[in-house]
Length: 113
Length: 111
Image 1 (cartoon, rainbow over the protein chains, first blue to last red):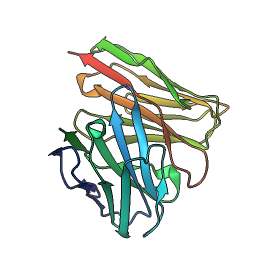
Image 2: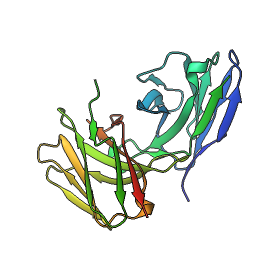
Image 3: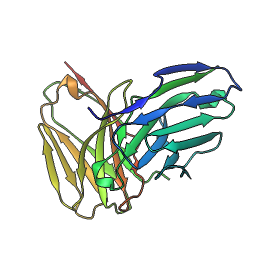
Image 4: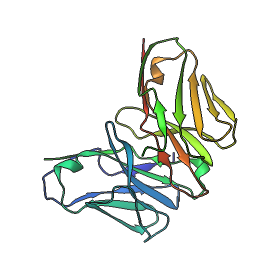
């Protein structure tokens, strides 16, 4: 059963902490994405990657960074967590051809206190 | 500016009713996808439409891509409580372009 696995379903972190969200896919997909999902705002793209060691900023990259050292793993880093980064974070992967759609992980509900 | 507008935003219906929801844009998309997301889970792809005027059926769900490839509709026949969820449309504007998502339609089907 092919899938995208996010390391944590729920996380609670303190303001100012450095936070790592891990995402691993087993489908050999080239493309990987990080979104955050907030009520009334929908899915917003934070960063994406079309290849190993490659990264591109999405629509809301401020306060985040990413790492893709291996094809199957895409990490999202909150350099200094703030309360406005409390959100549901979704990782996705896809083939280069958009027709096959994205496969999403189950999400990480992050609360920053 | 939201490139994909979904309507209605919320819909609550009785089991057995039919419904149609919409995904509209002023932009042309090379393909459009519909996803369903259940609470606490990630979105799951339902269908991809690529040809203007295309109609695809998935059991009781019927998806249509507009002739001009700017809009799409989802029709559910005889809705069931298991259809409850957030329905997202997403458009692609090129071969390897990232998807643009609408904000979604929250559907609740009451038993």
